[in-house]
Image (cartoon, rainbow, N blue to C red; front, side, top):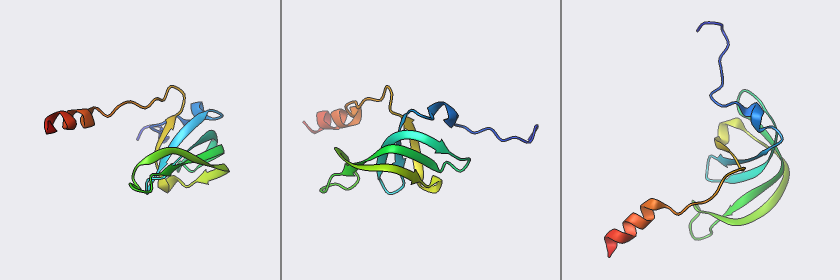
Length: 103
């Protein structure tokens, strides 16, 4: 490796002090203001909220939340980090396709 410096695939510095949503191993999802991170993707979120799971389907996240405040997410548990700005939910195109085939 020339230069001896490894570049991160994700430039987290541009998300500091902005809203992010994080998916964690095991299906939990949290969002908040990114306050800090390290090279292992341990992240610190302020004003964090957790999106609660559907009691009938634990892998499905609902719109219900609970306030967590200031939290640290361990990097080994982080599976996805996404900015909340510009994020919107869309209909699942595969579900529509499956429903059409059943008729």
